[in-house]
Image 1 (cartoon, rainbow, N blue to C red):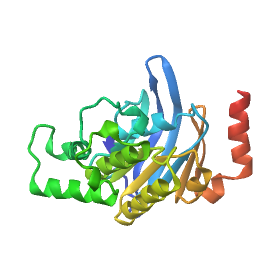
Image 2 (cartoon, rainbow, N blue to C red):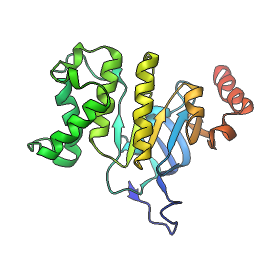
Image 3 (cartoon, rainbow, N blue to C red):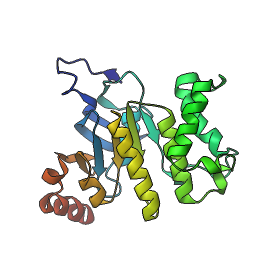
Image 4 (cartoon, rainbow, N blue to C red):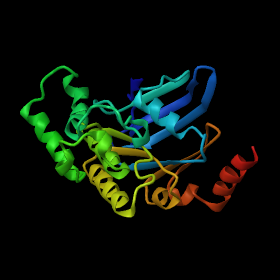
Length: 244
């Protein structure tokens, strides 16, 4: 992963970029020669059928999964924050809600350093913004799906990253929880954070500033949602996926 150092102005420079990136797991390739940019301070929605490589793209952007070829570029000094799906977190983890959000500070403090007063204030603010402060001392595994997802988003916010990556943060949640998370993501964008999220909800994708459409690990379209989420593109992607 390397910094973006081209001659573009700060306003034009993307927060992150993939350059001819291929990636996968062991002998199973997932992404194929993907080149895409993520506008700084904007919200990018990543859409596509199941198995199209959306979660893999986030993992590559986050640095969790190395690219097998190509390059990943980041403009900001802080590393990206990746918010996982709630289903990927075990019910048996002996963590409280507060401890889970405190883990978000490890990117800055390291896992063994005691949290400072400022760290604790950041954690308290994130708990409050996601409406889970009253649950701070409860075990994470005892929460409902919506509550757990809000805790994981709070953990991502606690990292105070320039680039916030979320894998279907509102999937399976009730309307109130979806709206709560959407409002928080809009707040982050207004603070200058670049938000990239995977979604199956086309209405949510259309409300984004930028959109990527994937199919079979390849980038099919990229740009403003109104320009790429057209009937022609959607039919080609989803009907093509069913027939392949």
